[in-house]
Length: 262
Image 1 (cartoon, rainbow, N blue to C red):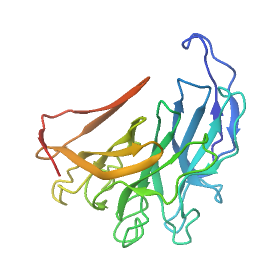
Image 2 (image 1 turned 90 degrees about the vertical axis):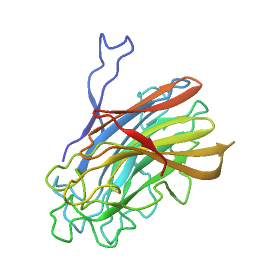
Image 3 (image 1 turned 180 degrees about the horizontal axis):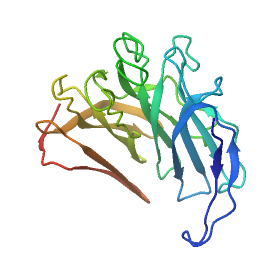
Image 4 (image 1 turned 90 degrees about the horizontal axis):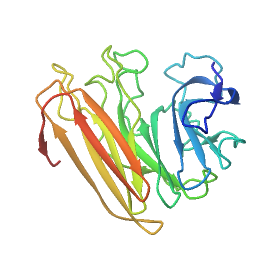
């Protein structure tokens, strides 16, 4: 079990504050991400873990949830740990991984993650060790009050479930990164690794993109989902960039890809 430490710089990284613990940690906690609001003093940290386990090794029957810490004064003080996803502490051992964070110019906090809640079998149950197999989706929620509360129910982003018996998520690769998320006041934009065009022989994955639009604080319209794909293997690099007043997402590939719409 590893505690979460925080330090900050106010001079572009020339000097740093002393590290201090802002969360004691828990079993399996990892993949921490940080987002700072350029228009306020809000700072957020998110990760996945199990609040009831103190060991790093999490079994197939143990759940993993998405956690958030929030500061509204530039990291001087921090909230207690909060669970982001609904269906927390699942008795069925549902696991959630690799959160991505983004802050819209209006201060809305957007969070997305990989989620096994719809999998017909638990992750790792059939012919796989932990962190292998099963099927997952990308889910999303938001907060307009600095992480005090979250929109319910969670919003499913993927238009079809992702088979994790295929691809580099499992199969002794275990290559997965946090969801790519970026925001503007009018929408949220997501990128993730997806095995729908792969098979067991190639273990290929592609990067898929979806946009979710807002009208004020209300979600509107349908999800738009598209992909860039190429004959396997495809190794993606996701780059999310945010600017004041606007946001954009760039997906770069280490191979040439042809574009198609799913």
